[in-house]
Length: 170
Image (cartoon, rainbow, N blue to C red):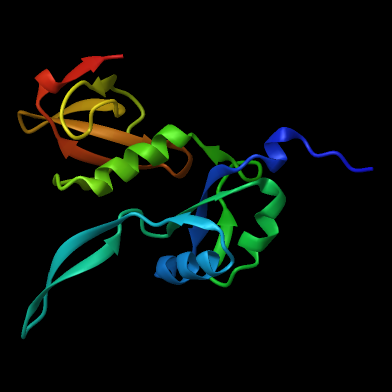
């Protein structure tokens, strides 16, 4: 009789490293296998010689997030375009709070940008506004405050401008 640990059968969020420019195809293929995916996109204005157009680009190029039990990792890693499940010694789950925070950025209509991964800084929580209860790091950039939410496992971050009075230290 085979017994699996709870962490092996519990659904958790994992970062999937994809081949270059394969994020959408990987997300679509995984959805076809009925696997929950999250591909955060941001809309950017692109200009060509003859026109301008709003185009969706992955917020974290080369990454798609999946919610799976590790028991099903074979279904993910055998998907064309998938390089690996991210982790230093095998797949490592992301904290659900980090995925929720990035989803909140995507759902709101505030301006946000990818931001270089930060190791140090003051941890804060937003106390009012559309990002209420989101935790992150507060940094000062050109005399304006920015909220940074880090995705530690893939060394990526997302940032937005925020009023200092809308946050408090954790």
